[in-house]
Image (cartoon, rainbow, N blue to C red; front, side, top):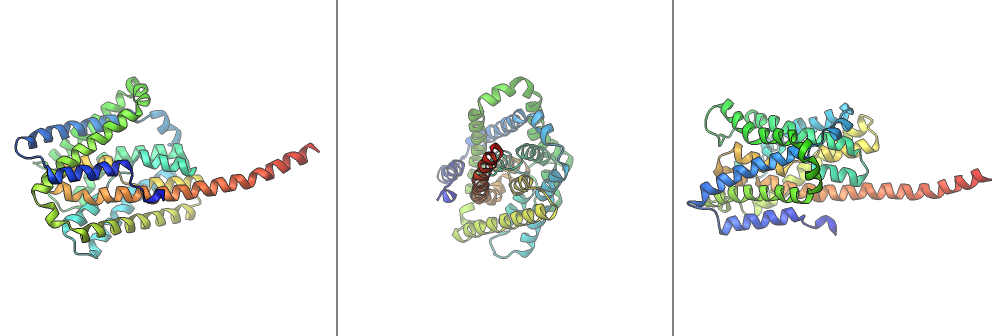
Length: 339
């Protein structure tokens, strides 16, 4: 079945982790990959800014109740569930894994997959574009603040809190803003070469993952992460996603949103961004901890794609079935009107 198929990006991530496991960057290659990773992160966020269309944001920005709930789900509900999971601590798999779960919970939503699933299921695409884009932009500010607020871990960036925030802004926000400013000149080129931009995104993420896991392998990650831990990460990711989907679905119906908005809430309020999370972790956390901290995020990324793909297909089938039932009725009404 299609739901159990790994997406191509996940296959590339697995290959990258295996490469870092057997051929980690060592010695003189370490500073080279650090420089390359920093450049890749800047390019990644520049491209995110260049892809962001102001017209699409304005088109979907008026639906404030929907956007407010999606932001609540992304930056309040998810972190609260993450804190609950850390407090519950049901399986003894080490503090770094629970730190990873908490970290994924404070990240912004994805842009591409949230919009794609909303479109497939027949949701409010304009609102999805607005919410997902706003989440990605706000996440540059909010996620680092939440890291400092709810996570007890020392930053990879030396210095005080203001210096750390300055480093984050320089590496993430400045390229993003520059890309968005340049959108009026390069927007057409970006739209025309979407597949090339997608490959740039993926290459940037894979470089960061290779660099992070090289450091983690040198520090003995696979002595701390076994099969039991990986199974728990999978089950924990599934539990977290199901809880968020159930709460979002209940809230959408409780607050009287229509079907199209319900779909948008479901898909935009349940996603976490691998594209933002991996580069941000590389800046926020010590190099020795990044590999194990992003492991739950990489597993959750695959779980959310599989589960949301199934849900989107179910919505689509319901919509197609309803349209098929209405067709004969419309035909009958047309014949009656001609008599």
